[in-house]
Image 1 (cartoon, rainbow, N blue to C red):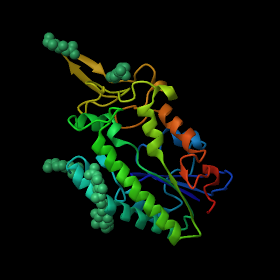
Image 2 (cartoon, rainbow, N blue to C red; image 1 turned 135 degrees about the vertical axis):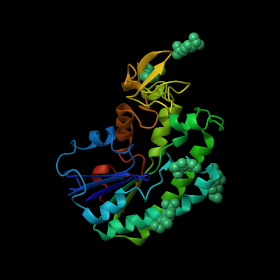
Image 3 (cartoon, rainbow, N blue to C red; image 1 turned 180 degrees about the vertical axis):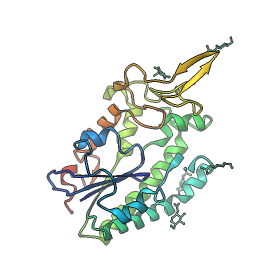
Image 4 (cartoon, rainbow, N blue to C red; image 1 turned 45 degrees about the horizontal axis):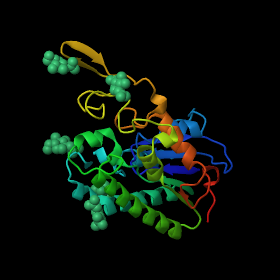
Length: 272
Ligand SMILES: *[C@@H]1O[C@H](CO)[C@@H](O)[C@H](O)[C@H]1NC(C)=O
Ligand SMILES: *[C@@H]1O[C@H](CO)[C@@H](O)[C@H](O)[C@H]1NC(C)=O
Ligand SMILES: *[C@@H]1O[C@H](CO)[C@@H](O)[C@H](O)[C@H]1NC(C)=O
Ligand SMILES: *[C@@H]1O[C@H](CO)[C@@H](O)[C@H](O)[C@H]1NC(C)=O
Ligand SMILES: *[C@@H]1O[C@H](CO)[C@@H](O)[C@H](O)[C@H]1NC(C)=O
C-alpha cells in the first residue's frame, strides 16, 4: 500500500489503484487541500471502498485531526512565535504516527511538506499588517511553514534510517505551490493572491461570507459564486486551491522532480 501523508491531517481516504508499484491500497492522510484535483487527476476517481475500511482501527486515530498541524486550529489564537515553537513537537507527533502506520503494515510513504500558507487569502486577510515578500505573501507565516518543512525533512530522514524495509518519499509541495504565486504567468495563471470565489477586499475574501454564501449589500442580496475563469486561477475559496492549481501541482510532483529521493510516484514503493 502507498500512504500519502500531508502534514495537515484532517481526513482519510482509501482507494484501490494499480500502478507500477501495484499498491493494494492508497491511504491519503491530509488536510482538505490534499484530496482535491491533484488526487482525482492522479488516480481514477475514488470508488468503493471509499473510507477507512483498510486500516480500520489505526486509521481512525489518524483521521481525527490530532496528528495535525492545522494552521487555521493554530493561528487563530497563538502568536507566530508560539506556533513556530510548537513545530518540533508537531513533527515528533507526526513521526510517532507514521510509526503506527508502519506497525499496521504501511511500507510506502509519500510525504508531502506543507505549502506557503502565508500566500493564502484567509491568512493574508487575517494578518494584514504582517511583512510581505516580493510575491505579496506573508513572510513570517511562510518562514514557519519552511521551518516546519525543514524539521519534517529531518524526521523523514530519520524514519528512513530506522525502517530500512520501508520507502519514504519526501515531496516538496511548498516549492511547486510557491511558484504559482511568484511566477503565475509563466505557468498560465493570473491574480494568484485573489480568491476566485469569495467576496470583498484586496483578496476578494472575507471570513464573514464564504464561497457559496450570500451577503446583503445596501439592500441587495449578492451570491458568492465562482469567478469567470477558475482554470487560470490559483486560489478557489481563499483557503483551498483551484482544480487547475491542484492539477499543476500534481503534474509537477508526480514525475519525482520535487521528491527526495527523486523517484516518480508510480515507483514510490522503491527503497533507496
Ligand atoms: C480562540 O479563543 C477564543 C476566545 O478566547 C475561543 O472562543 C476560540 O474557541 C479559540 N479558538 C481556537 C481555535 O482555539
Ligand atoms: C522558528 O524557530 C526556529 C528555531 O528556533 C528559528 O530558527 C526560526 O527563526 C523561527 N522562525 C520564526 C518565523 O519565528
Ligand atoms: C503531541 O502529542 C501529545 C501526546 O499525544 C499531545 O499531548 C500534544 O498535544 C501533541 N502536540 C501537538 C503540537 O500536537
Ligand atoms: C453602499 O452604499 C454606500 C452609501 O450609499 C456606498 O458608499 C457604498 O459604495 C455602497 N456599497 C456598495 C458595495 O455598493
Ligand atoms: C470575486 O468573487 C466573486 C464572487 O463573489 C466573483 O464573481 C469575482 O469574479 C471574484 N473576483 C475576482 C477578481 O476573481
